[in-house]
Amino acid sequence: MGRIAGVTAAETRERLLLAAVDVFARRGYQGTRVAEIAAAAGVSNGALYAHFGSKAELVVAALRAYGRRLLADLLAADPLRPVTDLLVAAGRRLPREPDACGSLIVEALVAARRDEDVARPMRGYIGERAEWLADLVRAAQRDGEIDPALSPEAVARFCLLLAMGSALVTPDLLRAAGDEEWSTLLTRLVAALAPADAMPQTPLHKGGSTSESADQS
Image 1 (cartoon, rainbow, N blue to C red):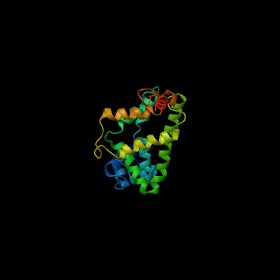
Image 2 (cartoon, helix red, strand yellow):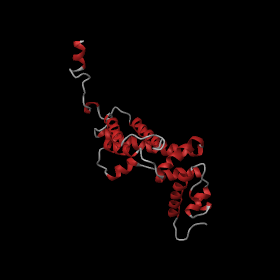
Image 3 (tube, helix red, strand yellow):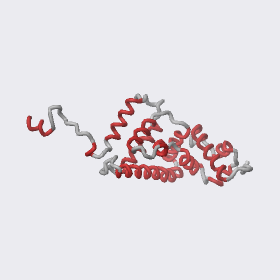
Image 4 (cartoon, rainbow, N blue to C red):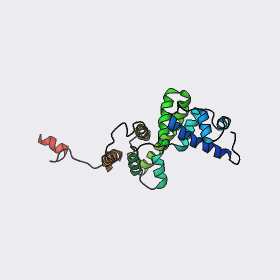
């Protein structure tokens, strides 16, 4: 099997990426041989190496192409929707059972812990995702949705850790909270990102303000 007649180089690359998603999800990074991905794509090992220099490069390329991007998909579908609403909507989908594309991030993360060849491109990939999220937070800060005192990088890091943690701790390992309970928590967390002057002021005591209570004591 070499280059398939009538198939362009771009189409061959796409076939390899799709095959990689499927094989890595089923067999794991360590359990997958490059020859299996080439066979699944219907090409030779040589054709695979013409596009990707190694298995490590291929797993990260597959993640870039097909990794789960809940927030980006929601934003593309409704660009005018407030960022805080998008964060809640994306968060609601996190506890779901991951599909093959969702499992890909798990394989890449685990492999990166053990293999520096995977870790190097993964740092670039995660750095890009973090910067994209930080830019989204900055836009929300300019629009008055998120407190400008908060670090965009810190918010982005929190979102990434939550998303990647949900991929690692799947519903079969941990009994999930009810949808309504989870949504309530997410809404409360995202509301805490609002500018301080936009958050409702709730007195600590029903009888009046904190200072009044202190005067009476």
